[in-house]
Length: 282
Image (tube, rainbow, N blue to C red; front, side, top):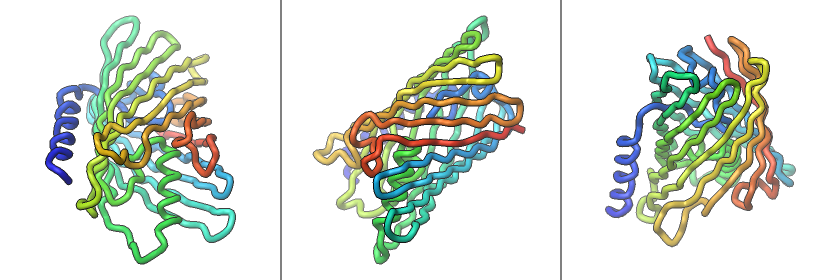
């Protein structure tokens, strides 16, 4: 890691700390007002599925979220399973991830909400390079594309993700935008690997119908920020997410269709991904 790269990371982290105020988790669909204002413990389950021409990846993730007043602490445990058309299935454990957040809104007829959170993905153990890493890397890559970010699956690295949010809740309509970055700090081979940073954004909206059904749409993307000749994993990747969530008091299941908008967002020549999930509120 060069001194210039280390300085860039510190600058980005400093900006994150200066802007951090109130936060929410970084999901592949916008949060409904009920989710945003929740002060109850939650267990979440996300399962993106990517169906390529020659293989399939299923990338389940378990979330544990514990509120501390207006703040939240969360633990994420991601996994991935690769099923090729020919050959054996491969299972890969993702990066155990910690996330801290704080969120709140102004009082009034319409809620104007601000937020920020900080995620730390610990992919810092060294993989067995004597074994065949290709299936494991393919499973993790499917997890990266399925969850549309590096935090949960980038191997042999510490991933830092500060995100900032602006949300508007007006009657049954809700709008959410997020802006931040994902920083890849290599844990091994630092003589040939450098720090990489990616700008991350998402903007979405939805409507709550009869206080129960919430269709929504989101545009999400990442683009390389690094000033090196090699931009890392990809130069940019963008997705359009179409989703539907059922809002009940204790259970909030959802369905999402993700559409890759460029080549780097594809998995095995397929632009489409399907995600099933739910949250349990106590």
